[in-house]
Each structure stands twice: as structure tokens, then as C-alpha cells.
Length: 386
Image (cartoon, rainbow, N blue to C red; front, top):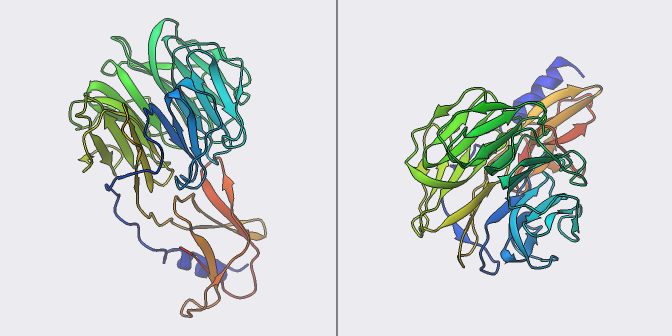
């Protein structure tokens, strides 16, 4: 393939639709009202996981249109989902940690001990997990949850939150007591660095590559790091009883929830935490938030009998074009809205043809990838909604 042909392909990528504004409109989801302290979603937001304290786990594989529950009633405390939504994890303080390898159709308990589990996180492929037990230790599994080992972070502390990069190498764990706020590791939990942030770290979130981290401090502010936790800055966020935090894949979009009786609020940031906007949603005792990779889907759950909420916006992906061997590699961040790839031999022609070959998800960078065979003529490609 000539340089001229590659230039034409790349030029078409720059004609992708512009991103819409980061949504702040929230709506109640069509799922039975119950107390949901734990929620998670796949990278594209099609799978949504909602755990009910003293009840069941509800799973939707169609972005919340319909729900199913295939679990017994348990005291569910934390959940996590792989990027493609096939591998799920859920903790119960009386029985341990359950794993599903088929998007919640069946669940099996593993060898994790019975603990007061507060948080779960996993790598994009779901094979590497980290779990925080309040008043105990932080545990790690490197075999999809089959076996668990305590990490060298000390026992008997108020471990409250954990986060993981897509590859599972960058990890973060936060304590909700009057000691070091957050611990970080860049080698999968072998070695750890303590960061004496303001005390009582209630939530932590990570970008896909693990370079951008955010930590929510109880009654204080939200801190961010751009170097995997080596250094931190305090953002100009209001002093809130922060409860939960979630990040987009690139770390630029963040959503944070506070709880204060019925006066909790939802805040969002579109510039990696530098500035925050209070969302126009009813005050609730918010317990958990979650976000898709592109930030096109945000989820929020509250305590009591308040329903689950979602906020959706169409985020137009940016096409990336590269050469891979004898093929052209077209890739884009996995979207939360359905897009199709179309091709054309003439940029000025309206005759765009939808490709039938399906992209595959790269779990390393959370990008959909499509390999295309080059032709002797120029080719143009674009993403569009069906």
C-alpha cells in the first residue's frame, strides 16, 4: 500500500462526527427498586451489574432494557465486571466471593475467605482481581478468582476501596482510617508505595493504562494523580462525604457521588478532575457510581429503596488508522453507542457501504479493532450510527 493511499484513509478518519457534550441528564432505570450498594458495567455499557443488599444480583446484557437474576439472596457488598462483560465477580460477607464466567447466567463460589468485603476490581480480561476487606486485608487473585492471597499491606485496617488498570499491573487500595490514605502498586501488587493523602480514602478509580488515578476523601476533596500514584494534587472540589468514584478509560471524565443522609450529590468532571459540575439530579444517599469506557454511560445507585439511575450521551469515537503487516488496522475506543464501520472509494460520494466483518475488542487498550485488506485504489472509512 502506498503512502498516498494511507493518507487518504487517515484523512477520512478525521471527518468523524464531533463529540457531544458530557451529559448531565439522569433517568430512572427499568429495574425493581431495592437497596443497591454495588454496581458495575462492561466497557461498552451493554452489561450492567446491580447487587442488592439482602437480595439478589441483577444483570442486564442489553444496556438496562431487560434484567435477569440467577443468584440466591445474599448480603452482597461489592461487584466487578471484565471489559467484555463475560467475567463477573460479587462478594458476600457471609460466604465469600462468587464468580461468573458467562455474564451472570451461573455463579460459583471460590476459595476467598468470609470477610467484610468492601470493594472489588479486576483487569480488563477478568483474570486478575483485587479485593478489599474492611478490618482485615487486601487480597489478590491472578487466576480469575479461583485462589486468593493476602497482599503485604497489613492486616486489621479499614480497607475501603480498590482499583485496577486494564492489564492489572497498576493497582490502588484505600484506607478509611486516620493513617496513610492510599497505597499504589505498578507491578501487580508485588511492591507498594504509601501516599499520605488526607485520611479516610473512600473511593479510588483508575484509567485503563493506570497512569491517571483519582481518590475521593471523606469530608474533604478529590485528589488526582497523573503518574500512577507517585504524586498527587488536590482538586478544587467541594467538601463532601464522598462515597464512590468512577473514571473513563482515558481518565479525562470522572463521576463522583457523595452521601449525607438524603442530601448526597453527583458531580462530574470532563478535564481529569480539574473542574467539577454538580449534576441536576435529586439529592439521594448515593452509594455507588459506574462509568463506561467512553463516559457515554454513567450509573448511580442510592441506598434505601431509591431506584437505579443512568445518564447517557452519544460520544463519537475517534478513528485511528495504522498499518499492521500487509493489512490496515482501524481502531477506536469501545463505544457505549452502536456504531458501524462504512467504506467508500470516493470521499465526495454518498455511496457509503457498511462492512459486515465485526471488530474485536483489544483488552489491553479497550479499543475495538478491525483489520482491513488494502486495495489498489484509495479507501475511506468512517464510523456512523446504524
